[in-house]
Length: 451
Length: 140
Image 1 (cartoon, helix red, strand yellow):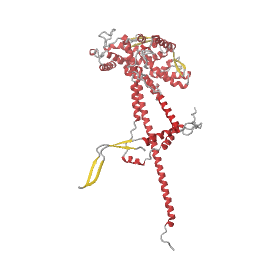
Image 2 (cartoon, one colour):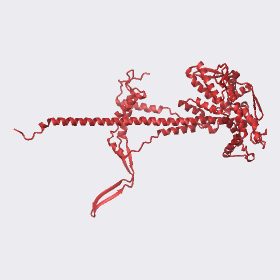
Image 3 (tube, helix red, strand yellow):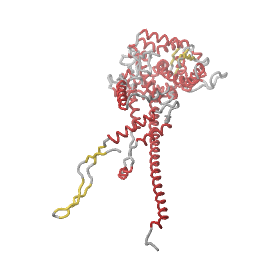
Image 4 (cartoon, one colour):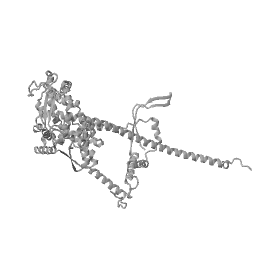
């Protein structure tokens, strides 16, 4: 765009032009709209997860690696054991129940008592045979949990990823799941929890709720996840042999590779797969961004679907609790209930919760689980961000100070060089003067005239 | 899409986290200059004073590093950026040299000795100022 050329034949004089310029500037400054940042309540503000992702994008940091770190920690059996047992510990503490010493339970604990009780309950459960048996169970089941999450996201028939599941354990435990039930749960699960602060369910009309449920169910049943990238719809479905995510060697292997022990690694392979799909359907340059976008989606789905995929684990824990003397009758209001909540409420399905949104007891376990996982995710992101911002601030100070000192030193050197130049000029002049005076001295020095 | 299960209040900390990071970056703006010694301050006499032409040429010399053209533009249009810089610096320097006022407060405790004489003979007075003294300076 060419700059407007200066008009040299202006009819205004200096003073006239100055006045018009000043008046124009004043008018312009008054007309600049003032941006007012609204005061928002916590429930209307951007969520912490979204805000951190925004800050990471500004810093040019790819969040995929951090999300993968969270996924590795999620599927670590030790951490998962603690997270699952934390829900039991917290909910018992909210009801004033002391799991180790039931007789010391109180009916109305204050917040600091609840906090202490929660810690004591978790320590007791984790160090007991419940903790060790659960860890063993999770070590065996964690690959299956990862397969379930991928199935819940992509749906369809899973391409052989998942079939009817029959959980067993020690002490005797039997629980069955089938893919169709899981698919129904997936459509309800997307409305259970969000990493974004959205309006509460009571503010969305029932018809919107039904539409969303149907749209998600269609996507999940068709086996496709659709993304819009650069205004182009890109459909990503599972590969024909999704089991390769869980085996070394990659796709299209004639002989199955060794099983991958760590589900986190399988999920990383899934992210790479999504990037490859986008590269084929869209553009190579969008592959990385698509993999990162999918990773963000995936972590939200993982936390949303956690109550669904971990339900068999909860059932197993309920099976284990009586072995350490914790009494769980069917009726939670029964005074001999050492937990203060019922198994039925704790293991409510996502659709159950969605159909009874005002029933707090049904929501409690999912509320605790989703927020515990979100806290873990935010911990990883914020810890990393603090380090990066500290590094950035230090680099900025040192770079700017070094540049400033260099410029100052150059100015001082130039100034002294100038003074040196002047000094040399003066010395040269004096030397020349002395030489000239020496030559003409005989003429200047008349003395007594000689005849 | 709505969410039935809300995010826990203790995790709704976007405002607090933003304030934390802002505070961390605010430290960057603290440039703690070391105090000058008295000889360094007295050597200020040989400072040349502000010169808008020198400042302007120093700034224009940095334009190439910043990717700003300093000569006439490709289509022959005058480079208003250089003229703008010159006008800006001239006005600022003019305001500093002609309008700026430096107000100085000198701490009490300046040692003084006075010699005199009266009918009784020589008088020597030794003391120190007991209250702060205000002064005025002009920036050059």
